[in-house]
Structure formats: C-alpha cells, structure tokens
Length: 339
Ligand SMILES: NC(=O)c1ccc[n+]([C@@H]2O[C@H](COP(=O)([O-])OP(=O)(O)OC[C@H]3O[C@@H](n4cnc5c(N)ncnc54)[C@H](OP(=O)(O)O)[C@@H]3O)[C@@H](O)[C@H]2O)c1
Image 1 (cartoon, rainbow, N blue to C red):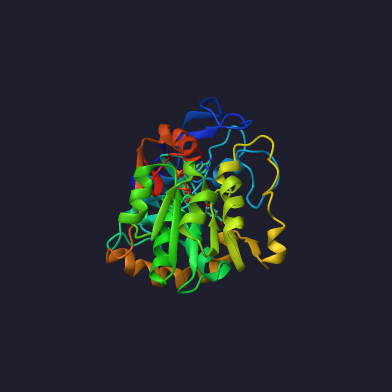
Image 2 (cartoon, protein in one colour; image 1 turned 45 degrees about the vertical axis):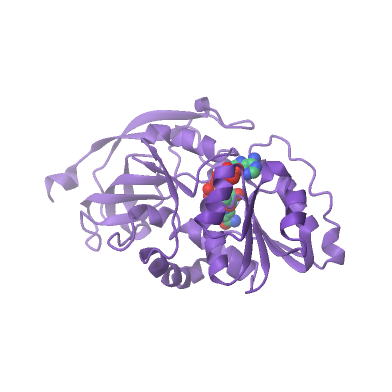
C-alpha cells in the first residue's frame, strides 16, 4: 500500500445543526472539521471538487418519513458530488479517476467503490454530471417523455424555467417540436429563456401567471411542467385544454411553508377537462437513465444543448447556496458549489 492509501486528511464539512421551522437559516447548519480516511478494503478516498445543492434537500432537513431519509442532526448532509480519487483500495477504480457519488457537503469523502460512478470528463465539463447530464437533466427528460408524454405541435408551460430542471425541460421540449412558454422571476431571466434557451414565449410570474397565460396561450396548454406549485399551478390548471397533463415535478414555492396553504381552488376543472395530474420521483425511472444519457450527452458535447450553471465557491457557502435556491430570483441553471 502506498503512503496515499494510508492517508488521513482533515476535511471541512457541513452538518445539520438543527431542523428549520419554515425558511432555513445559518444556525441550522454547522461548519465542522473531520478526519477522513484511510480507505478500507473496497473504498475510495475522494477529494470533492463540485457538490450539488438541490431543493429536495430542504425536505431532508425535516424530521419524518419521506421518499428519502431525513438528514441526521450532528451528521454531515449528503448529496451528489464529483471528485477525484486520491487513494483507492478498489482495483477497478484507481487513484486519479473522476467519480460521481453521493457524499457531498464535504471536502473529502470515503466512498464504497460500488457506490461511485466513473465519469468521462474529456467530452463534457465535470459539473454537467450534477446538472444537465445528471439527475437534473434526467428529471426534465422523465417529466416530458414518460409523465407528460408531450408531443410535437403541443403547447407546454414550464415554471422555474430558467432553473436547473426547467432550463433542460425548455430545451428538450423545443427539440421535440413543442411550443414552449416559460416563467421566471426577473426580466433578465425572461430574456434568457427566449434568447438563449429558445423558448417561444416567456413571462415574469410577478406580472400574474393567469393573465400572462391567457395572453401567451389563448388556445390553452396541453402540458404543464410544474416546478413550483402554488399560484402558478392554479394558473396553469386554469389554462389547460381538454385532456391536458400536469407533470407534478416539484412545488418549490411551498417547501419553506410551516403550514401548507389550501390547494388550487380550481382543481375541479380536472373533471370536465379530463386532466391527468401525475407526480413522479425521478429515481423510480433509473432503468431509462442509459437511454437519456445516450440521447443527451452527444447534444451537450456538441453544444446543441446548453447546460447553464451558477457556481458558488467554498464548502462553507453551501448552506447559503441552498437557502438562495429556495427563494425567487435565484440561480440561472444548475447551482453547483466549487470546493
Ligand atoms: N420529482 C423529482 O424527482 C424531482 C427531481 C429534481 C427536482 N425536482 C423539483 O424540481 C424543481 C426544480 O428543481 P431544480 O433543482 O431545477 O431547482 P431550480 O429550478 O434550479 O431552482 C429553484 C428555482 O425555483 C424558483 N423559485 C424559488 N422559490 C420560488 C417561489 N417561491 N416561487 C416561484 N419560484 C421560486 C427560482 O427561480 P426564479 O428565480 O425564476 O423564481 C429558483 O431558481 C423543484 O421543485 C424540485 O424539488 C423534482
């Protein structure tokens, strides 16, 4: 065994200090230093370079059962990360390899090799594996293809359209010949949606989603890709055509609510219009990930799909990045913390 394989390193990490009530604050997180390593048999010591912060992590800060277990108080948070193997005791993944794994929120991680995925960073930049070519892009693909069954010639409305999932949903739908309307929080994002991502129309939701959808889709929408819930969900239901589909991907406008508000007041429209409202969790569809990657990776490598990314520097700033993400007027594209 080389010296590197015996190595123990100091690693800064973010732990859950307490569970938030409503909006998370600085004191819900703690920056701590841990000694990490050396790797045991079958393990890798990985120096993280990029870590992902994502809206579902807000749910994991709460107590109680969900589709993923809650974070534990006093323990580091976790989530997707990309890093370089600095010491390996797994022959199949030698030191120097770039891997994707789920022990983010820290500078160094001990990762069982069987839970690490080797990624090729020669064709696309490493952050792509946390965004456009990772769970984010796959979520957009599943939502459009499997859940929304969106077809050429149809009209699609995407909320949080300049965000990570939204920016991919807009572009993938455009490639399928769909008419795309996106919403976002600022005039700059609205312009970005139209001029950079190719949306046919876009609006600032502060101008009133119901009114803007009546203007921009006078014949109605066939599919709504819901990232935010709340008022925009109600507006989208109001704008549906008969047999429209509502892809319930996320409800970010509600994640910090201590008490959930009443549901959309116009839900009864689902009956007469024969709507299908379907929630989904991307991990249920992993069997289709290869199909997604084979379609999307070449498009990203060729620059035919944009993978917008907002970088935040320093593991100590990861909590701020998550808090920022949960508010309007946040990131463009995928938010990634450079460690
Ligand atoms: N079902 C699944 O398996 C799955 C998987 C991944 C993600 N998701 C969900 O998909 C959604 C998007 O996730 P993402 O990772 O791509 O995040 P994101 O869209 O990059 O970031 C969140 C965006 O939401 C918008 N936002 C924040 N607070 C808002 C509010 N109160 N009202 C309206 N918009 C608000 C902000 O955009 P503006 O600046 O435009 O307001 C922000 O940029 C989230 O709801 C997430 O939970 C679901």
